[in-house]
Length: 515
Ligand code: BES
Ligand code: MN
Ligand code: ZN
Image (cartoon, rainbow, N blue to C red; front, side, top):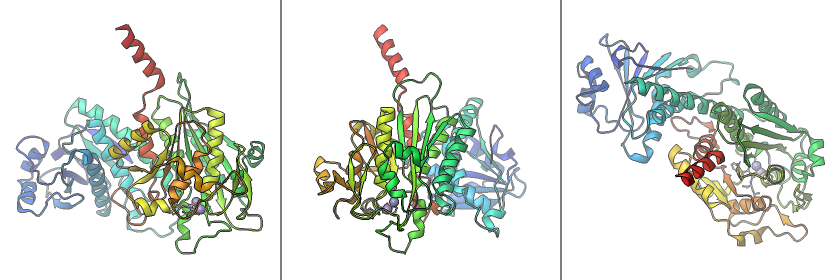
């Protein structure tokens, strides 16, 4: 998609559809671009608002034919809902997606948007419009041989109208950032939506290698022999039931001049989770192709960090495996030895995510001595029971990081909610035969997953995000079509953006001293 910022007046822009997002209860006013546009349209927009035919409720639309009064043949009024501070950009993101998908349905190839007034910078505004439009139009077409309506129509150009030269620059910056982010999320969605017979551990590894070839990222892959060498008994144990070899992906973002311990992101890359010998019920099992969504989010985030020239060192780790039952599969009662040396009794082979993460977390701690670790995993059905599809379950050992993630989540509308990790919960995973076991009874399922992971992070500041309720959607919303959501990339980028670079920190301290 071509994205342009233009200083055209709205009445002069020659797009197939001109979208005018409007807050609920707002009028076109007497001055400004919207008022001028309405004057050219002989008060058509004002009529729609005053008559109540268009009320501005979130994602509502009204289509007007302009009959030659302005350059664009259609104006699309789009409702932004109530103008309520913390959610303004989220409403804009949704309305932008509604405008883009409506324009696509009309067969439009170009869409122009008249940016509304919001309590945010021009850059944030453009980012929200761009993210909304691109993510709303997202579609995986690869597996369809017959074109449906949406794939026959393709929006090729998005224009944001700027009111001044300085706004134009800021809008440009925001739109570029929005496009980079939307492309990262789309990559993750493609991986989550594509079937397990294509997306296996080797495919994820090849994807990481392609990322390294197309960006400044460094990539290393561990093969099973190297995993053996490192004593990654848990990852190898999960993978031993499958004909597909496991993979261990290492992506490094090392900006010039950046020093200090890296931030490590870890994502569960389970490319199909049948449950293994503790097999899952058949109903809905097909959705378990998305059990690599944490890994996909890490790959997408790393791509975006490189393209945005993020100033700090970041490492992305993705342990990848299938979980299948077979004559060679790990069995309940089996004891595995993790890379950290801890022994794990496998009670339920369906609690496999924590096993492959255990070795990745231990690898992160041992090889990188990280400033902090954030892991993302579709870890438990229990988190879906607890929080549904509105928030990710968050646990960890670092309150500052968790506060940062919660606030970033509110800003970008990828919310997290903290669950406790009291030491007492760890009693539930004591094993009679090994150091620990991989499940701990019916109570507090998601927390037990977190308590298990905590065994492998030592004293590294660490946060675990259980994204099982957020990685996939059956309903969808305007900028999140049904299926894989790509959840977590926007949250991680927003969080990392809020973290001062260690060098900059030292400088400002020196400055403070000098003055
Ligand atoms: N991948 C699943 C968790 C999951 C459930 C993801 C629903 C997305 C939607 C995970 O590997 C799993 O099977 N967890 C078990 C853990 C249990 C055996 C302790 C679960 O939640 O049932
Ligand atoms: Mn499982
Ligand atoms: Zn799983």
